[in-house]
Image 1 (cartoon, rainbow, N blue to C red):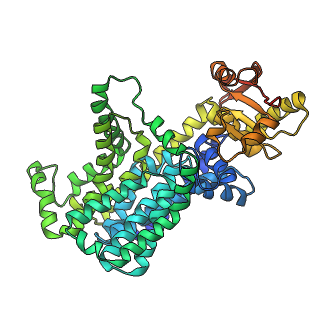
Image 2: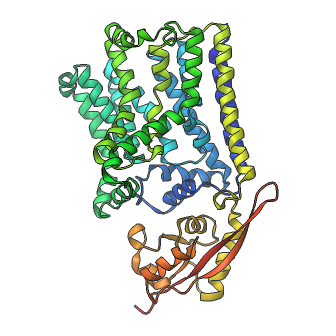
Length: 497
């Protein structure tokens, strides 16, 4: 029999190394990653997009590695690794060791754990925090120890401090407790209130920050979920189907792999005898009601909540919001539709999952090699030096603010020689951690990707933003194909006020 635990360790190490090295083919860091680093550099208890936890991790980690960009790919994979280890630990509560290992490996057939994990952001952090929360909730729920409730409270607080959709996991916990008929018992448990106090203690400074900042973050969420131009009636059908379909598509390699193995090695042979479907979940609930309910709630409720919100409100949920929602799918499949784990089936399963991981990596490498995208091929130091020079040629004063387009403003904030602050979208309301009077006094370099974008800034600040000038960038892929991209820039000055 294959020593699955040892193979599992080798697999995790190889996957970690693979996805830490492949993204080095990029010349510039992903935009979300740069944004998280800027949050960590400048903000305290909030940002205008998300709570601050991811930024607190990103910028110090980048500094720890001497401002080496490759450190951010390592950081992403650390969270993927931590998440998969806790998926295994959680699966081990319900499955034997071999099935738990294979359930954790199945997650690598979901695109979130490979191709999409390169870009360090709040979603990648969620890959670890959600299974960690679920694990300590289950431990606390079953064993009722102070330490487990304490760790659960900490992780709930950090999960909400990372991204608000962490609240969806709390909904899943709540529904499980109600369905398991233990709500009254938990209400009477002082340890539960201890965990709640710990979580509130962690998140309360951010809530106070939101209050002081006129809940700017919630305005961003509202804008991101707006339904666009689809006719009102169809929005209630199109958006839930789009979100749910995206989750199935992103998990398709894992689902197809499991369907093949269940058909060949399945103990229930559900794909050869579809009549068993109607009895499958009820039989399991009768045998181990609490376990079955918990697994179903963790695997199903998060996706159902997002889909239902889209259906009821008619607003769109971004497909990436489902990033952490699939953490229990592998465990659910192995629990409800187990397969044999003899040497032959286990060996084949491991090879297939490693094949998916390599295939995703090859696809990502091809994208890096072939693209001429600004987001991949920007030589950051070269661009920043040019923009610094343009400021000095015009102003002859210290360069302290770069405003406008988020991509260029963040680049300058991270790679400029001085302490240049990013005034995103040239709007102090979007950057509440900076002093508006200081910004007006010292002025800013205004940056845009397109001329029409630059004209928006001119209209927003008439007679304060100069007409645009341009710099041409040559973006070249690894095979010599080039694309010319213009940077539109000018200057903001409000010193007369």
